[in-house]
Image (cartoon, rainbow, N blue to C red):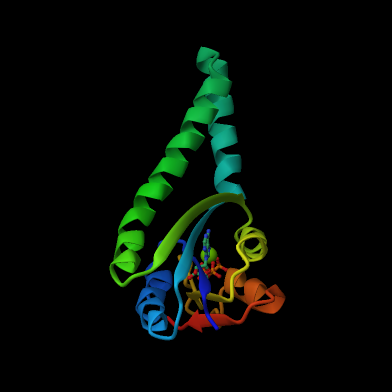
Length: 154
Ligand SMILES: Nc1ncnc2c1ncn2[C@@H]1O[C@H](COP(=O)(O)OP(=O)(O)OP(=O)(O)O)[C@@H](O)[C@H]1O
Ligand SMILES: [Mg+2]
């Protein structure tokens, strides 16, 4: 029933709480996890601004911008490695994806592309506002996904 599970993470403690549940789902027949992190469009826009400034100083705008983005992707992959190892240790096949854009859109895109049977994610993430009953990413995913969503509470 839950063969392939999508686990989107922003590397927050709240998202990290999903890992224990993912391990349990292995006993319910889950076999593959797609680990996803989305580099937020805001971050990419900030890079753009910073490196535009760099361009005016040394004339290397394009190269710097691309290098910075590659570094960012590599950093995210490095952060995924221990999570993947932990899940592989309980017998999962793990696929890592780093996408760029708006988190909820990318999560829904990957849901379709990977034909996932369930999504497991935090009810909250990095912002973790005390008064927020639910995070904006988890709310949008929950409303629009086809697959059932397990929101792990903070
Ligand atoms: N950039 C991201 N990449 C992958 N998954 C994400 C990303 N951002 C959020 N998530 C997933 O969504 C869950 C809920 O996070 P969400 O961003 O909705 O809450 P928040 O950060 O507390 O509030 P806000 O709506 O202010 O961002 C996280 O636990 C994580 O599973
Ligand atoms: Mg967030």
